[in-house]
Length: 201
Image (cartoon, rainbow, N blue to C red; front, side, top):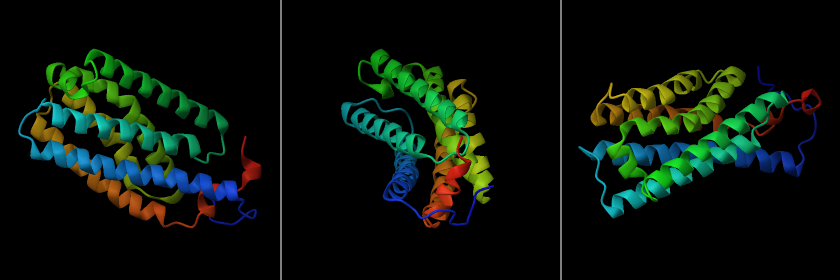
């Protein structure tokens, strides 16, 4: 469980890393909400240049925001952090593949090859790891649900088990839960995320 005691005085680095970590969570929440709105408003994939550019910008921004949380997360066990970083590197490689296949247009890849959405699962895994960690440490139980729902909806859409409309409902549900999770997380005292630094391995 997470430590809610102040074990050592917080350094400037402690405060900055926690703020960046939580900012990453908050930005991810906002970006996924924006993606949910765009998908919910569309009855089908629209691949014109303006829509494609917005999707690209939002998707790349999501990778950056998740990366902020991945690289500044406080974990007692270093092998978990290394594992999370490796998963993030895999997710970035998957994004590069999407950009190369689509010649810079990710949306057209999703439209023509729905199974390519599976390449987003590693990113969902990173964000899911973070929400599950918070659920375990601070009883933010929606974090466990998010860790399961995010990759599940991507998989179901990629194999054609849900329609675009169904996927939009799923992303909207994810956005709502993530917003709720974010508001419960970001107002916690900063020292909650730091814990006992002597326990870090």
